[in-house]
Image 1: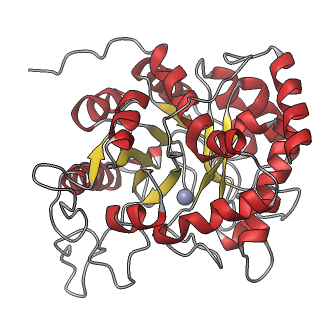
Image 2 (image 1 turned 135 degrees about the horizontal axis):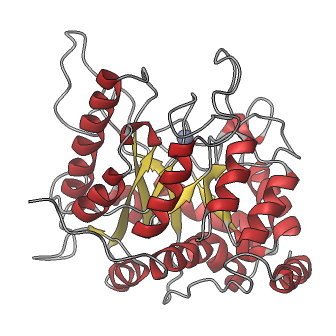
Length: 377
Ligand SMILES: [Zn+2]
């Protein structure tokens, strides 16, 4: 990949448009930091009596991610998404989603400071396995002392209801890395790319509230995530965002025509805008039937050839439908790295892919943020 990637990167550098005309990945000290930009917080759904189960990670399936598994597999940083499924677009639905988001954010904080099965204090007194991180500096500091960096995110702007002030509220109280504008359903912010059974697009892209969300995210220093958004909604987010936009977990439509994947035109627009696509290890996105590391690497290679190595990253979607042959849990992360080595990606290219580009985008988004408004008394 070396020659092609370098040429593509030079192409990206001379493009000159958008907020990041000459993007540089954020270097993190050795050993190499590996960041996974999308893991769902394993969340217990209601039990057979309709009562919420008590503890995150108490799920029917064994979890694919925990700080201990991450450490075992050489995964140094994980963006944990509070995933809020699409519900009715009414007061009750939005209220339940907002309550769920707050509970999940609390759980992510507890996880990052826990001493139990998910975060045993293996490195001596006073040092947890994981650390809650909000900035690239936080991630670097955690990595230097061998802690797994945990970054909180929100999957589905549905949880914001009609109140974009909640973006600053969540950011101030818990920290917030990105917000995925939509999920599998049109919401008040914009249209979803998954249209089966949803009927016609509700907004033809983003709604006025969706454009307000992009402004509020930019102001708060939170990345706009266009995975799950319709192509029109994605392009509109690119036009309106003053910070680089990300697709936190998507793959390549040119290689596999899944509605969740991005076509080359979308990828080039993302590059022009300074954004990053985080190629997802979801088998339905990568191939017909089973998918393995070869498919994942092929999708990464396509993105790098088209966009340059400065605009591509990696995500698993673990505990949310992700996992492929060879990468079924955070403990197998090194197998992905080895596949990238075998495909010819050198160390600096792999550093960029494994979160260097993602952290560059996050750093840029935070650099242009306004100070958060004070909390209401
Ligand atoms: Zn998703």
